[in-house]
Length: 310
Image: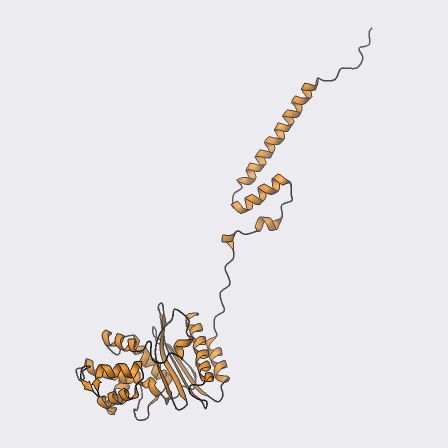
């Protein structure tokens, strides 16, 4: 019998076909896996880009790469801490032991009053001119006075504006005399305010109540209210409260300065919030000293920060 000898090897083209089929299977598997990664639910485009690139290059996918946020996903900054108003008021007042300081804040929406420091009556200086103006407008509305009536070298309307907007003491004296001191005291009493024109003493909370009644329309009609508040803007001295408020807060105010007393009585409003803020101070330093301005500015900034977040 003839020995058949070793079997011949399989033809080369048959091995090539097998390799081609094997490669096709691997490619198909890769496509399926890649498609699953690209369509995985809940993955965003930024994360998918990382997954695709790393899968194709063979690099190891890291947790940090998977969790890296896109620009729109940046966490918002933490809100600023709220101002502890009583603590800040006490800090400022305590830092000026040689000064008498009284602060009153009244929310015009609900009438809630906050007081800090010494809020007994002070020499009100020119802040009391708001009371005189309100009393005169009231007499005009009752028909007892006229804005067109001569008063001094001009008419009553001129004297009212000069008294409030440029703080004319001559105009103030003319208007108080025309009202009559007893009538001015009686009018103040109807508002719950104790006031003697001869003494010119007013407590910060009473001034805050006067401003709140004015801005809410409880004192005067709409036209007179708007006119008086208009005179309390862009006055001849905007260096006290107005100089320390943040942008976006509207200020109507009447300052007062005399013999060591430096005051500002203001209405502050922004959006739907409105407050009467009264700062009365007395000190041995000059009324126009930089230290007194800094004191009132510091108080104002802490107040507006707490009331308006600005």
